[in-house]
Image (tube, rainbow, N blue to C red; front, side):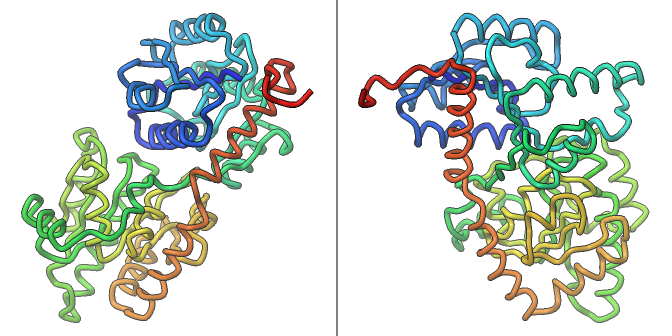
Length: 389
C-alpha cells in the first residue's frame, strides 16, 4: 500500500502537532507500507531521513489555493497513491484520483463569520467543504464532540465518522523538570513568583480577555486575605501584535505589572512552565479536542477549564469545570484550586490517570487500519507477496 500524507501544515499550531505525531508513530509502527509526505521536502526530512519507507513529494503551494489543489491532484496521480490522508478540514480533496481520508479537528471556521471572507465566499467554501466531506472514504474526528458537530452542521451520517482521539506529544511524558531546569527558567524568563499559566493559540475563541478579567478580580480577592499577593499570570502563545484587546483588558483590570505575554516557547521550555505553574487555566469557548489541559495534567498541574465543547470529554473528572462565559465562575474556580490543598492533590492524581487514556500508538494503529480498509474497499490495495496462497 502507498499512502500519501499532506504535510503542508506541519509547522502550524494544532494540526502540526497532530501531523508530527501521526507521521512519527506510523514510522515506528509500519516498516512495510510506503508513505509519501506531500509538502516541503525540508519539512519532510525529519522523517524521511529516519524511516526508509518514507519519501517526499514537493508541493510548495498552500492547501487553500486553487494552484495547491491542482498540484495535489497531479502529484497523487504521478506517485500512484492507494489512499491519501488530508489531516484537516478542507475542500481541496475533491476529485483526487484515489480515495482519501480526512481528519477533522473542529468546524469552528464554519460556525462564525470569518472577517477575511465575504458572505458569498463563505457560502462557496462551506459547499465545497461539505462535498469534500461527503466524498471522503472515511472521516476521522478527534472527539465525540467534533463528530456530533459534523453530523449536525454538514449532515454526515454517523456511520461514516470514526472518533480517533489525539494524545499529547511524548516530550511532555519525559518526567518532571529538575531543580536545575526550574532555576534556568527563573533566570532566563525572570519567573520568581507563583503564577497561573495559559498556553495555546491566541484567538478570540480561546477566551483570553475573560482569563485576564478573572485574574484581575482574583488578585483583589487574594489581597483582602493577604494570600498570593505576588501572583502573576503568564500567557504563552503565538503572535500577540494583532490582539490589542488583550492589552486593553490588562489596563482595564489594572494588572499591567502582573500579566506577562511570552509569545511562543519551544516544548522543552513549555514543559518546565507546566511543571512550575500553580494552576493551568483554559476556559476556551470552543475546542475540537484541547491538548493543553492534558499537557498540564502530565506535569501534575491542576487544571481549570470549560464545561462545554470537547473539554469535559477530554479532561474527565480530572479538572475543575467552569462556565467559560462567566468571569466570576472562572475566578472562583481559580481561587479554590489555588488555595484548596486536598483538591489540588486530588486533581494531580486524577490528571496523571486521565493522560494515560490517550495514546498515539493506540490512535495511529487504528488510523493505519483505516488506511488499509479504505485501500481494500476501493480495490487498490496490493496483495501481500509473503501471505500464504
